[in-house]
Amino acid sequence: MDKTRIKWIDILKGIGIVLVVVGHANFIFANATTTMFIQKYIYSFHMPLFFFLSGYLFVKEKYPSFKKLIHAKVKTLLVPYFLFSILSLIVYVIYGLTHNYKLIEFKTMVIQVLYLNNKVVWNEVLWFLVCLFVVEVMFYFIPKSKTKLILLVCAIIGYSLSLITNYFILPWGVGVAFTAIVFYGLGSLIKNTKIKKKITSPNIVIFIICFATNIVIGGVINTIVYMSDISYGNFIYFYIASITGIISYIQISQFISKYNLITKSLEYLGKNSIVILCTHYIVFFIIQKIGKLNSLFKNNISIKGYAYALITLLISIPIIIMINRFFPWILGKNINRNVISKRNIIKTQ
Image (cartoon, rainbow, N blue to C red):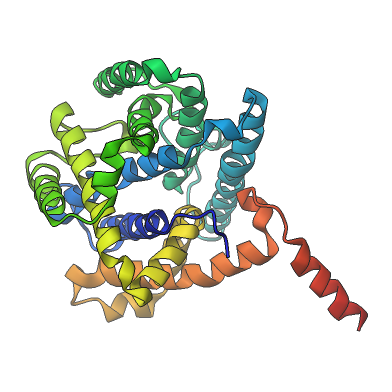
């Protein structure tokens, strides 16, 4: 058991990744639109939540030099990004060649794998890994004494860039990073403040205010948010909805933490959220081709997205087990030497 993990954060990551899968499944399988309440609601805060949690967990002292930071983040973010991008590209090419599908030009494939525009092959959720890498590099150089001011400047730059995306796009998600770093920085800032105690302790009043605000502003008033496309709707609405959404789900994670069956499941998904993030589009691609599944939900289009999301999460479990056991290096983890030793002992018996 890893005693360094924080229970409510794993639960919150679990909730977050479930919302990511549900949001994507609704668009792909249930013909959801950008004006639907549930889609606007989920998209109003689900990616800011992950940047916030990443910032909360960031400990600068772990990286006494910039070189050590780069080495660690290349292993845990860029290696998974390129490996899953290449895997996604292989799936795309094989499918295209076997179904007489017109493939995009090789040059375009390379540009997308290198994330030189706003597209990341067809497994577009991988943008998060590169953007988080850029955010962590940027945040490393922000002096503590000027963090609040710099985050404010980044928020203004990030929103300004969203207004010119039709004319100018920065590579490697740098345009998104200026907005993402605001949430990352907020996560880092609250760790040692009184605010942390207030928002991470169960409080029904804080929950009701934040939850209601997020629903009204994020789900109704503002337009749908696409961080990957640098599209935020109204500047003020975006930040209010994102922050209140984050706080309300921190509260939810605290409220449900006493229910073991729920929390154990969400903790497991949270601990393995990167695997689910990187693979759920591939799982979508596979199950989309299963005709019997489509016929099951033919007359129930409203629940189709949720059903496919549940199926995808269940299929993700053996994928998680396989990667953690046999290919942990894909995620930048060290190979468990005890497991290798046990295998060798078994072989010699």
